[in-house]
Image (cartoon, rainbow, N blue to C red; front, side, top):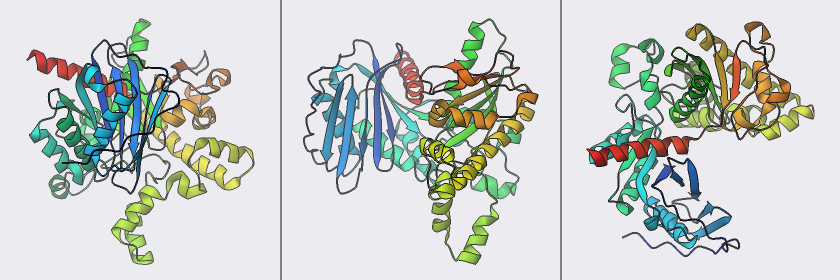
Length: 425
């Protein structure tokens, strides 16, 4: 039996009791190797009732917090595993005055990074599906095992409701063979399941569908809408979407490929592995750590937060300026290549932390592209954006949009729909 988690520290703001949901809710879980993020949402009204995170799972001393309304409920204590992590989540809800047992939770949605070619849509989790997710851990060793831990913990504590896996790769199972196939020996590729799977698919699907719906609401024909989605955050990816169907994406077998990211190199000559092994005596694990955790913007200039990067560039830091040029150059290369893949562009959409908040980064990516019909309006582009907005000039041939992503809402809605369908079956 797992140990009972220690009592959490009471919050000074606990005097403002949260509203108990009257409608059906979905609990969304995102399990990391040492963390457990969660949200409680009404998927129909698109309202968030509570959110939070359990951190340092399996380490000497854990911490957690839940936010609901004006209440912030903290926790400190041992969290040896994800089962205790889920117990901490339930305890925080109770202490914040929002019991999960009374919150009308009708489904639990689990974010799963890697679904391989097996899972192309949200899937009800049973023992077979759980084992398949575990088996796909060889393609996502940092993510899928943690997701399985979260699934096991949540199914144990919520045995009577549907649990739904929503896969980051599912959207990109629709890629055409020319886009997902590597020019690798076919026998080797087939045996070891090597192909382009992509990532951030839940975000790319959510944003592209929402933008398409806005165009449709204006009476425009969206059947062949050509959209480039730029999910720019610490992890970053691009996709080309035509008529709601993805035709290419930047991440590949793993999330390392593609754009320059916070700590990841993005595209790099694969022979770097052999060169570092032969010349530096580094083993595979050391090289993998270097490329995934010690490179990207952090490796180039010692920082990955774009607020710090902007301040450093404005202060005249040449090293940081060059790093920003490298980052923007890679994004522009993908915009250009996807424009040709799509046969033209109707919409470029920015999303995620950098895409939504760093106006100077958006301007840097698209500067000088007026000759291709891409023209920003500096006033519209200025500032952070919590709401969708068009930032292109009125006479721009290509519409440029900032659309905040909401992966948790997307997971909640997909889990709710599948859960309802399973009850009706």
